[in-house]
Length: 412
Figure 1 (spheres, rainbow, N blue to C red):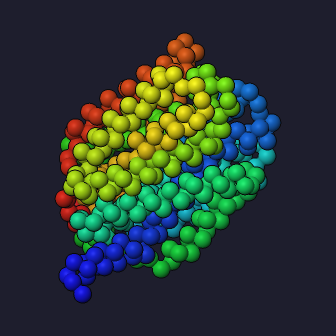
Figure 2 (figure 1 turned 180 degrees about the vertical axis):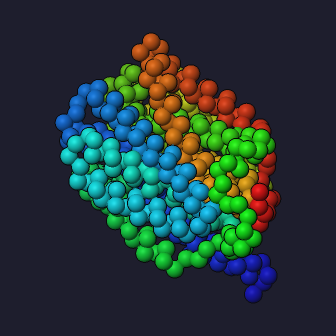
Figure 3 (figure 1 turned 135 degrees about the vertical axis):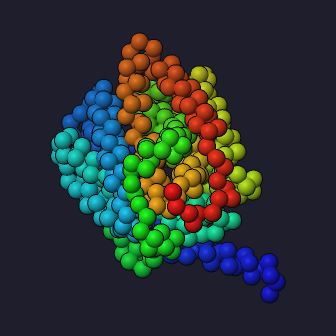
């Protein structure tokens, strides 16, 4: 057997080890839930007696409540991941998420729905950050990008699964399925091991998971802030353009009815394919920043098409949604670079809080959107926000370091 074949087998063995697969399955659950709420927003709210503009207003409020839960959860799980270990987050977060989603299937009022979305958001917040942290720490730097690509690939299955589950079953059952998936994942996690890098850092008795360390040093704070701002365009697209795709299609003059669930499914599917492509491209170019730059500029291009191009058919609209999702496919890469920018004693805190602060940015973005919409119209209100978030992301990207070749065994 040649050395090349042996090396390839060793790489494959490292990539398919249980912690990597379990982290990837965590992203599957993450994608399922985020995707599911957007799909069942309209039918679930109609079942609870809402109609007309209430579907938009209450849907936005529920999304904000879920994102608020993710903001809180991101902080709690991030700190816990650095203080107690990556595995404590992977176990605790999935338990809370699973219970909340099962409970969500039993709601019969908006306040109950809101409470379940908040708790599910808290639980779900720990999944991706802790998983990416674990993957970046157990894999050699030469193949870390392939590891996060595997995570993205499993996320595709979660996005697709939520669409078909919602199509085949009533919205309540869809939430039960999400909770059941989380409990099955919990069983798989029993046999995974803690990151060796974290164990060694723990034995050094250094300060771990200290949020003050992210703000009491100017250089570190700027690095942290830039890590967050790079991801803003992603959740502008998801939280505004796609969540309310039905309303945007109507404003564009498309006569055929738009299925918001289908638009979300195509967007998330495109995003996961984008995550896969950006992961492989990052390995090929040996750069995180260059690939993220390409995807941010592509995203802006399709935002302009979505809002300004004369779209007159649902088919064309759905295609643009898919391309928008693909161009936002630097999500996993963006979290990877956040994890790589910080030492072991802060890595889980950063990798968990950063994506959830970006998701939580949906709250102010939606507030600005709702403020601008009455006077400027839905299209131009969104255009202003889209250009603004892109400009902010490009400035942030310029101000962070390249991390592709960075070793992970260090502390702040």
